[in-house]
Structure formats: structure tokens, C-alpha cells
Length: 259
Ligand code: LHQ
Image (cartoon, rainbow, N blue to C red; front, side, top):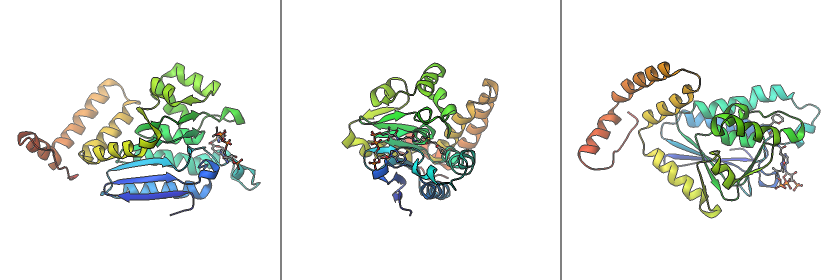
């Protein structure tokens, strides 16, 4: 556990909370190191079947801590990205467990990018996304140039990235940047309900689905069809598939084990 990041497991759901509310959960090096460690250990923990990423206070995450950049010994930006941000984005994508961003407030810069990297986004009505990079003379990073056009299409991505106007929760829902918008006081309950649903799913099939959706962006239809056939062969050989069929026949909810 590190100052600025809380990681809690409750049953099959792990919740990672950016916890530096006075600085809108801006990311320092220790927080980034702790986040990467947490993602890696969750990845090895088969008892965790879904992950929630959220922020304490009125922000999800304001991105890079700009005060940290005043340190003359701060690593160059490209090094900071290669060594700290990019591994975090890769770790979220590589997790077998689905990751839900519960966007409780402003998500700016790399904070927005981390929300984009998650599998699902539930936003509080108070949430807003700010592609703050351009305002400080930087380019979108931590996957923003890759995720944004895939989430909202090329034209909207260009406007969001180049013009940089904040996007409120309703607009984010309208353009497909978030999956649903809920009242602020119900956000965590809604995220938890979604996490519980995912945690009750067949873990290997969900993991294969997550990774297949990801791969689909870089392969053609023939390759995707073959990918699906290969994965279905694997999924069909699991005990969870047999359990799913038995539960259907017996008209009861399935009890998936991940086997
Ligand atoms: C902050 C921050 C913050 C420190 C609010 N840092 N204190 C990767 C590679 C390496 C380096 C470069 O960057 C990157 C990727 C990036 O993430 S670049 C983008 C970095 N983030 C930003 O530029 C966002 C800066 N923040 C803002 O624009 C605003 O604070 C937003 C729009 C997020 C929220 O605005 P307000 O709701 O009006 O809040 P505020 O500005 O009053 O902030 C509240 C406090 O939080 C304030 O501190 P204070 O002591 O005055 O109360 C801010 O200084 C602090 N804070 N963001 N990133």
C-alpha cells in the first residue's frame, strides 16, 4: 500500500483507488510504481475476477503531477512514458480480468488515457474528460491517440485531441466515450454491480473475449474468424462450458470456476 493509491479486494472484486484528492489524484512516480505493482499482482491472483479503477474525492485522476515535473532531476518525458505510463497501459490491457473505470469526476491528461484503456467506463454525472495535454504544449499520450479514435471514431477523436474542450458526462455518453452515466451517489454501487456480474462470468471465456476484441483492431476478417474458431475450441473444452450447458438444462444460474 502506498500513499496516494489504495488497493482493496472484496470477494472476487479488486478496487484500485487513486487517493490523493487534494491534488485531484495527480500521478507521482510512487503512485505509478504502486499502480503497476497492483495490476501485476492482480493479474496473478485467480481469486480476483473483476477490477474497478476509481478516484477519491472530486476527481478520477488529473494525470501527471505537474509539480513533479519542476524537479530538475525529473526523468525526460519520453523516458517517463516508456518506463512508467506505457507499462501501466499495457498491464491494464494484458490483464485477463475485465477492468471497469468508475469515473467519479474529472479525468485529465494521462488520467483520461487510463480511463480509456479500461474495458468499460461508468461515469458519474459529475465526470468530465479533459485532454489537457495540448494546453501545456504536449501531445496526447498513454494510449490516448490509439484508444480515442477506436472509442469515438476518427473525426470526433481529432476534435477532442486537437481542440481539447472538456467533455461532460452526457456528451461522453452520447459519443460513446463512456458506457453509462449514473447519479454520483450511486456510481460505486453501479460499478460494483457490474463488477459482480463480470465476476460471475466464466473467467477464461471473458479473458479470451477481452483479448480477441483487442486483437481485432490489428487483424483482418479472415484472421479474426480463425482467431474466434481457435478460441472457441479452447473455451469449448473448459469445465465452465460444461457447467454452462448443465445450468441451462437444469434452469439454474451457472457456477463458473475458471477451470
Ligand atoms: C494538480 C494537477 C496536476 C498537480 C490539479 N498536477 N496538481 C506524461 C509524461 C510525463 C509528463 C507529462 O505528462 C504526461 C501525461 C499528462 O498527464 S500531461 C497532463 C497533465 N495534467 C494536466 O495538465 C491537468 C492539470 N489540471 C487541470 O487542468 C485542472 O486542475 C483540472 C481541469 C484537472 C481541474 O480543474 P479544477 O476543477 O478547476 O481544479 P483546480 O485546477 O483548482 O485543481 C485543484 C487542485 O489540484 C489545485 O491545487 P491547489 O493547491 O491550488 O488547490 C491544482 O494545482 C491541483 N492539481 N491537477 N496534474
